Structure formats: C-alpha cells, structure tokens
Image 1 (tube, rainbow, N blue to C red):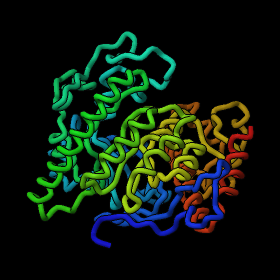
Image 2 (cartoon, one colour):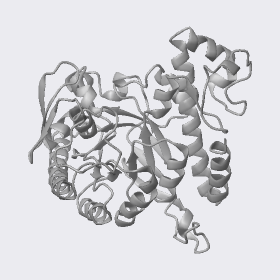
Image 3 (cartoon, rainbow, N blue to C red):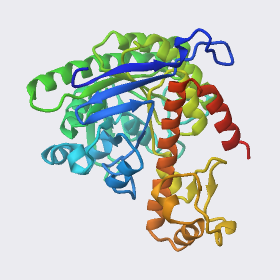
Length: 412
C-alpha cells in the first residue's frame, strides 16, 4: 500500500452460502486503513475526543484500552483554542499527546445542530410536520445557510463566523488530522422533500469545492503528512436521494466516504446498504455518530467500516455502564455493597481494580475520578465489541456471535 489508503482483507459475503436472514448477501468486511500515524484495522470504533480530549480520560488510557484512533471536532477546535494554535503545536495528535491516527469531522453537524437549537442531535421524529425552515421550539436561529456556505454565531460567546467548503478544508488542514471530512449541509428529518433535494445539490457542489481546495492545500504543503478526505453522503431517508448522493460522490476524488444525516433507528441498516451498494469497494466507509451494540452489528453487516460516537463517554459520566447483560446505572442502591467489578469478564483497568461499590461511592460523592473510571470501562466495552465483530467476520461466525450477544445484551 501507499502511505495512505484502504484495502479489504476479508468479506463475509464472499461465499455464496452466506446469506442474512432476509436472503441478502452481507456486505460486512475486514480491512485496513493506512494512515501516516499507523494502520486502523476495520471494522473499528473511533472514540470521540471533541475538543482534542476524550472527556475525563488521558490519551495513554485510551491507547491502553485498545482505541486505534480518536476523532476531534473541527467546529469546536476552530472556536477554541483556534486552528492556528493546533497547527503550531504540530497538529492535533501532538497537541493532545496522541500518537495514533486521528480524524476530524468538518463541523457541518455542529453548525447545523447548534444553529437550529437541537444541540447534540437533530430532530429525529419523522412524523412531525415538515418544513423548509426548521428551528427548535423557543430557540434563536444561530446558523444561516446559503449556496456559498454557512454564517453562524458561536455557541460560546455569540461572535459571528463563516464556514465555506474552502474554510472548512483550511481549518482541517491546520488541525492536521489523518482523516478529514468534506463540509456538508446536515438536514433534519423535519425538512421537506423539496428542501432535501436542494440541500443535496448544495452538498454535492460543496464536495467538489472541498476536493479542489484539499488538493490545492496538499500541493502547497508537500512536507506535511498526506490527509485522507472523505465525502459525506446525505439524503435523509429517501432511497433515490441516498443512492444519487453516493453515486455523485463516488465520481469525485475522495479517499473514502462518510454516511451522515438524521435517520430513524429502524431504517439504519437499509440506508447504510443503499449507500454502500453505490460506493466503491476499495475505499473506507465511516458511519457518523453511532455506538449502540445493535446499531453496530446492523451497520457492519450492511457495509460500514468505522464509527464514532460520544455516547460511551457521555453516559459513563452519568453513571451508566455497559455489561454483557445490558447497560445499568451504578448509583442504584443494590451496588452500594457490591464488591464485584462492573463486568468480571472485562479486561479494562476499571474492572481489574475497582468494584461497583467504589464506583457507587465516587459517583454519589461527586468525585471526578468517577467519570474517568466509568468512561474507561465504557470505551473499552465498545472498542472490544467491534474488535470481536471483526474477528467473527474473519472466522465466519458473525451471525452466531451477533445473535448470542444481542440476545443476552437486550434480553433483560
């Protein structure tokens, strides 16, 4: 392989005898993404370090728990401390003392979600009346989209800023992650079909501009490590729009693809399949913003290679921890005198050294170490699960592993 790139090592659907329950050939595969800072074995879960840190956890701990890469957010690093500072530090990896591969998303999701008042998620209820102008109830519009880009107010201090495809590329080149994303418009399920069509054309035009600017910046900085640029497939829950978007991006000079946009959980696998059936097999596919176990199995079966999500760390900071029998809250009364680990079969630092009773105590006492210990366990649980899924594809046991794991995890 060259200094960057992707190759497929194993495909679950190579054998004609392998079929999913609905008779379709699975698209699950094992591969490798080569970056200047190391190889990512896929499928892989990429923990989120929004502001160049996974909240409450040292980079060394993330490495110890098996994380292969981390994802930071261009929008947040642009606002604080500024991409020029990250660049002066030697790039986001050196800035945060992370030696492995890094991702940055383009900031498009944050511009839109914060800009319309939905904060961490876009409206997910598709039954609500559709509109071309979506805004959360009681919120002020902080982002205004036009064909050239987005003007938005900072959620930190209200200052006015402008993102265009070119600016997003410039910011992400300064931040210096190994894998970056094209700037896209992230719509909601509340937008009309007409608006989704218009937005898709806009995102396609922005994609072409991102490719052009990325190539220009790469040529201007030949001594910097080469960055992989991923185009983002939008189209909400419309099959024709998703396939159209994927085909359009596949024609451009992208190194891989992201699958984004708001969608309902029950449609996740179908939408990922629509997209992956249109995308080239020799480039990686990153599904933005998922980490629930059933979603991971569904997405991998339908062709996704990597994933990122803040959920493991966020719920951990709220005392929710994972175990093979499902997620539970460690502050519940029955854990007060329980001197067993969260999961006796887990190999993380937390489970090897601390009890449920101790976590119950430090959460109740509002000690900061509680967030650290719960996050280490949760991130390890999801990272390890995706590693196990990768192994099951390799040895042909994907379906039995999936069925057994999910039956136990959601059985209670």
